[in-house]
Length: 252
Image 1 (cartoon, rainbow, N blue to C red):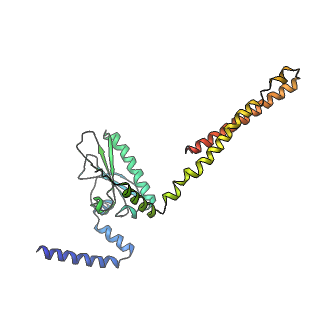
Image 2: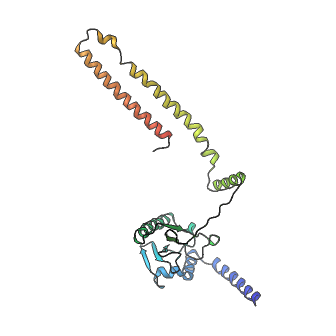
């Protein structure tokens, strides 16, 4: 009997796959909506306890919560996994999640929250509809999320790094590592050159011999003006130097 039921299930899967192949994207999305319980919650055909809603997002209380106040934040449109969702909707989903997290901290007097996304069956996703789990946390609430810590060799880490960077279309060796070697010495030379000029500018106006002689009033005034000009130049130079230093340190 078990073999017959397994055979029937395989036949049903093949028939369903053939049916899905012949569907247009619109028909496929509509078919998925009909099978999705969360789309029925969003449409209102299934009752739920709403916490927040707008034209793009619906947030409801989980009926089987990990902790009191466990919220499910979902897009109104049907998406199975994160890569299907447009960037604008992802941004809005997480902004709403942030707002709800702050609200739960105040209203439920909790000390923190876990914000979890199970993206794909291998990651523990059981619902057909993409969602964000917002779980309020208190100290000693006996809810444990344990992430195992594995040890990888340097070669394994380097291989994973290269695979990910190549998939993203970036080469770390070409774009990141040479930057400090090429740019930093040049900027450092410019800053040092400007700082070396400062003592020369300060020593030029300090000439005591001409002041001891009989100097007319207009000449004294002009020397004061020249001092003011040089002081302004020095302050401008200092500003430029600080800007360069800020750029070197990575400040904007």
